[in-house]
Image 1 (cartoon, rainbow, N blue to C red):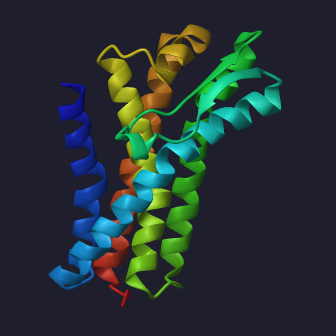
Image 2 (image 1 turned 45 degrees about the vertical axis):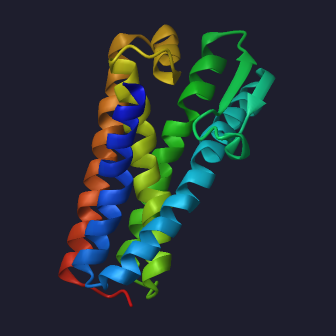
Length: 199
């Protein structure tokens, strides 16, 4: 069941938005199919790495000891999902900072991505797609995927956040950060629908 849900999330939050972007900027079908495949592979290779590095950064700045980690899935073994970081947290502060670090990075990336795309300095459609997938879609997927899994009962980052910050703040972070991602994506679509400028 988890694999089915994850496949649907990937389709709706990564693949479909890329297709919509290239359609509203009038790219040919053959071209954007190639772009979408390449961008998906780039996203797949970077998603877990960026997420786990943020946890590591949270540990580093709070002094928490990292016990074990796997920054990227072992693709060569057929594992496309497993990334983790285990740390010893001495207090709630260390736990909260480390567990929320990837999601605050998501907010920062959303802001950077929107600014880059709003300026319309990038005229190459593949590079625009790369900015969208790394700075808009990946953050949106990251927070929604982890928050939704928590809502369904998974023991993940948000479960840990609930243990240190409480039920209300955990859901507030999950909902507001997800809405920020959706809003940013919507604004990007409006920008490029009104002023298609990629080549």
